[in-house]
Image (tube, rainbow, N blue to C red; front, top):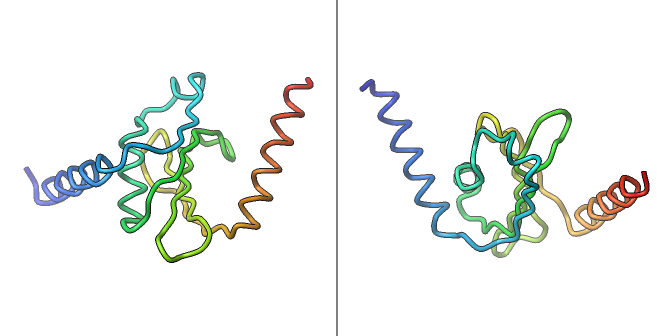
Length: 123
């Protein structure tokens, strides 16, 4: 086993242990999207927690964003206002983005998503 493989194995196992410590949070994983995911949600959660080790996962949503299948994690950090959004590619398992959302940003995003869902139901 090469040194790089050994390091990656240790990191992966460490991430899995960290994510397994938190298993209760809101999950929105539509079956029609889950069948296309190559990475399971627990593995994606481990990657999100590795990026934000002091955060607590509040919720996860599997969605298509800009043509990619993405696990989108909303995470909170004690003592910090707002939400950290961590996006993990559901095909590769790589963290593809992080963003801090204020309460106002989060409320506006929720309103846009609700409007989009309502307009798709009318079709």
